[in-house]
Length: 188
Image 1 (cartoon, one colour):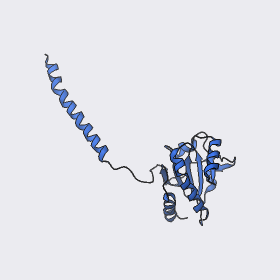
Image 2 (cartoon, helix red, strand yellow):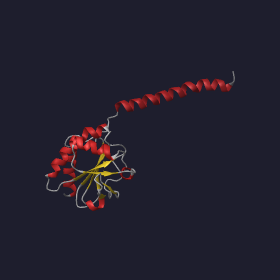
Image 3 (tube, rainbow, N blue to C red):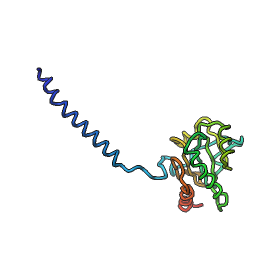
Image 4 (cartoon, rainbow, N blue to C red):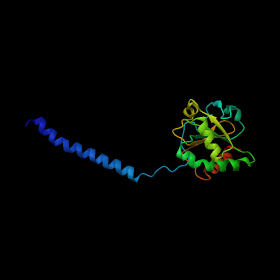
C-alpha cells in the first residue's frame, strides 16, 4: 500500500467526524430555535415613501396612490384561491366596518395578485367586502412592495410613507391594534 493510500484512510474518518458534528450542531440549532412570532415583517420600504401606484380598480376607475395623501391607506394583497386570504377575509370585513365609523377612517384596498377579475368579483359577491379592489395586472405593484406571497398587508401613513408590513394572515384585532399604535405615533 502506498503512503498516499494510508494517509487517506487516516484523514477520511476525521473529515467524516467533523461533517457529522457540524450536522448534529445544525440540527440542534434548528430544533432549539424559537420561531419568529412577530406580527410585522421587516422591509427596506418601512419609513420610506410608498412606491408609485397607478392602476385601475375592478370598477374601471383610475387609482393613483399619490392622490390618497391625507388618508391612512391599507393595501391587502389578495388572491381568491389563496387559503390564508380566504381565512382572513372576515377579519378584513369587520375591520372595514369598524373603520367606516371612525373619526379618521383608514382606506382599505385589495390589491389583486395574480387573479382574474371574474374570480375576484365572485369571491367578494359571495363573501362581502365593500371597498375598492385595485388591479395589479403585470405584478408591478407586488414587485414594488416586495410582496413575497399573499396575503400581505401594508399600511401607508397620510404623508405617503410606508409604516407597516404584515406578512401572512391577519389575526383578529391585529390590524386595528397596529393602526391605532401608528396613528398615535405618527398622528391621525
